[in-house]
Image (cartoon, rainbow, N blue to C red; front, top):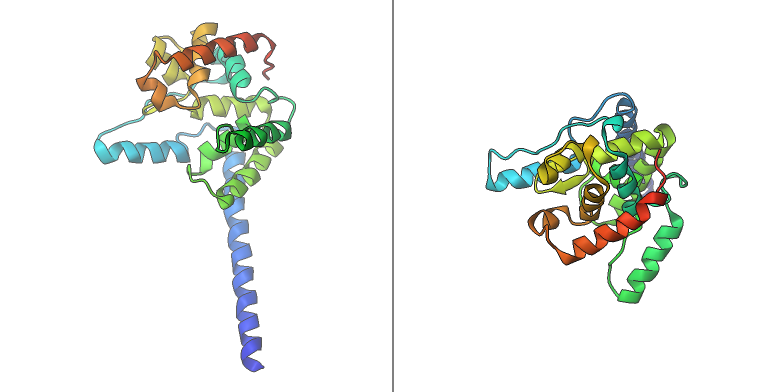
Length: 234
């Protein structure tokens, strides 16, 4: 009986320690988010992972990334990204439940994962803090961080961070670097067609960096162009 009592206490202490550790871990995320309300991140978790992967082959590899304030990013790119990635961006609280349902139905119909229901906020949560690992724990962390971002940040700030953190090619991150890498212009001067091209690349940026004449990319760009006039941005 005494042994069972000791084991019970050990389990309780271990569980309590785990809860405290998780709370501290989530609190660290929250403090980072509060800091980024007024400060721009110099890097993200995903950028660090990509840089580490590049340096396995080239120790001197560097990322191409330059911060662009929201006002210095073409409205065409903002509309294109919202049209392509999250048409209900201004209406939801971080989770597009209708989009998730449509993605699940499409995946069930195809018998494999061919569509995702992640919003811009969810993608930002992953880019800022998480790895590309697919697991229930990682999705749970993503959901918590998404809720934090939506609770304290404006949609304008969320979109600004996303446009500066998104991957757009091999070692290319953010709208400014992408605009210069592909078109030799600043993010502020992107045309509607160029903006649609960049938005179309987001699902597979490194692949499309190597295959810029892809027929699928061209077709998707035209679809995004047709959606852009009704896309609402903050």
